[in-house]
Amino acid sequence: MKKIAILGTGTVGQTFAARLIGLGHEVMIGTRNVQEKLSAPGKDGGKNAFATWHEANPKAKLGTFAEAAAFGELILNTTQGMNSINALNLATAKNLDGKILVDIANPLDFSKGMPPCLAPELSNTNSLAEEIQKTFPNAKVVKTLNTMWCGIMVDPTLIKGDHVNYICGNDEAAKTTVKTLLKEFGWKDENLLDLGDLSAARGTEAVLPVWLRIYGAKKMGAFNFNIVS
Amino acid sequence: MKKIAILGTGTVGQTFAARLIGLGHEVMIGTRNVQEKLSAPGKDGGKNAFATWHEANPKAKLGTFAEAAAFGELILNTTQGMNSINALNLATAKNLDGKILVDIANPLDFSKGMPPCLAPELSNTNSLAEEIQKTFPNAKVVKTLNTMWCGIMVDPTLIKGDHVNYICGNDEAAKTTVKTLLKEFGWKDENLLDLGDLSAARGTEAVLPVWLRIYGAKKMGAFNFNIVS
Image (tube, rainbow over all chains, first blue to last red):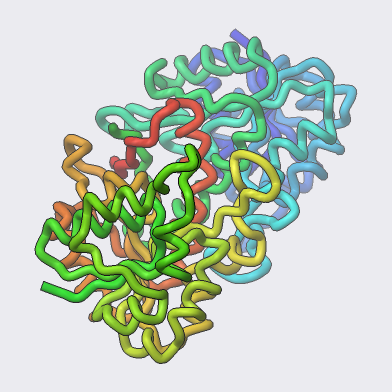
């Protein structure tokens, strides 16, 4: 049982929180302002989606980004990629120091139309994961799970047979710890493909452009890639 | 039986030429300067690789980029992506007008170290295929096959079971013609995934960064992706 911080209250964060609590972990979700997040009206003028979700998942503790990061022995970044550095700055370097920071976000830029492109400054010769590692050099950043729909991330058995989850990072021990967590989700060792150091995130974040096109063609996101040879 | 032009004398061009000749097509390979290409000494001071290949494949006609493009009813771009627009300019717009131009190249920039990145001006919010289409508006550009090792492109049965080949382009009839050629190579209909118009090449060309990382991790390129759900 681990104390796990989830930064971000969106669908990805909710999916991880529910799954991790189900597996017996202690979870705190971090957001900018807890009261605002819970009290902002929803689209229909009624209760918003996060407040509704939290009533159904009361074991998920809520806190600021800093409170959650301080609580977590391991931290998951599920914020929107364009906002991740801001959110992690609010979490503060001190609360990330020496900890494993699993980066699941993608630097998708929705400002230029749909489907989104990658943020030019965070892609190709850089990546969001590397930018996070540069900004927080004492965190142990591990990139994984960002190449698929979140339902599959936490339950790979939703898809029959083999399909791949990439993992990369600069700290071998941190990758080993994250692989253990991935196996709790149901990932098989042989489907975890270690691509080496964190610069491989340039490759795995660049899966999104084709992922989004396949999603558009198939009109469903519950798919993943298998590497066959 | 078709007259097919292959622009580019590298391994990809050679692979297509041999396969298309084997299938009964008439092939002309286009290069900047045929005599230079055939007479340049090889690495060991002896005969160069292309001259040796051509002796073994004498049915492949040779010509300039313009001669090959004029010859071809259908044209394959197998040049290096960073040089493709130059090569196609030498082929001339007149020789491409109204023809199907199958773009197999990737805009890999080797100038910033290994593995290569994508050319910033030809990726993310643009693609090589779209740049070619903009430069030669009367050609019918179809992007396909660029996401795998060339051996698999022309013989998908090298890999057992299903694996995907993306296709995109703005001209539906051109895509249908190219699919017929792909089926001659052995591609099954259900493994050809039509991603829509040519802007989807932003996605398929962006497969290269992760492809190169997988190649680095597995130390072999004879793999492909299958989409599972």
